[in-house]
Every structure is written in structure tokens, then in C-alpha cells.
Image (cartoon, rainbow, N blue to C red; front, side):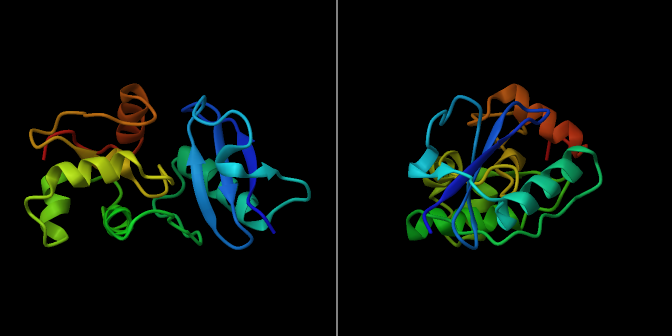
Length: 162
């Protein structure tokens, strides 16, 4: 089975959910992949991973879910996958700096590489790249736009300063 996708409306715009047979592989922001994202085909029959992802995202946006429980397949380099796994360890309602993540990975000088990997995160919101802020607590680049980053942090009542 090739990857399939489903588009859903959300408070941060239309999101495109992409799944393989058994895993969530991507969430694309509106305009990021308008046609056949990541080589995926439109969902035909209801797909269990896409249905569960949509259900959990709706619960998250309704303030009813703080931790996602979805089968994930991060597609990237070893370093990128390490960064994306580190994102999953950031608790709901908290933030970390790029340096915090670099230090946690045992690579304290890799702050820029962490930033690049964070920016390439294929599964935003679920792997909460929005919880990564500048060293001074400032909102920095975000694939979904800084307005959406602020919205997600406000939704979680995350402080902007560390």
C-alpha cells in the first residue's frame, strides 16, 4: 500500500495528514502540499491511522488531549530523527531552546543543525516543534507561521520565556 492522505480543517488552517499502511508519516501545513503530498494518493477507504490522527488532533485543539499516542514513521537522516524524537520528550505546556535540544542530544555545538532539523520536522504538532523557541524565549521560525506557533503555545498555555 502506498502512502495516502486526508485533508482536515483545524484552528491553524487546513492540515494534510499523510500515512503509510501502519504509521503517520507527515502533517503538512496549508499550502505546503496542495496536491498529492509526499507522493501520496488521496485516501480511498477510511484509513485507521488517518482517522485516529484526526480524532486526536481534534481532541488536542479542543483542549482535551495533552499527549498524542500515534504510530509515527519519521523519514529523514539519523540526526533529524534524533531531533524529532527529542521533540516528543518536551512536555505539554513547556518550551525548550534549540541549544537545550542540542545539549540533550550530547551535541552542544549543534544548535544550528538542531534548528534546521526542527524546521524540517515532517510531523508538526504531534512532534511539537512549536515548543522550541529562541534562547531568549522569542518565537523563531516555524513552518506553519509564527501566528500559528503563538496559537499552539497559547493553547497549551506555554510560557514564552524559559
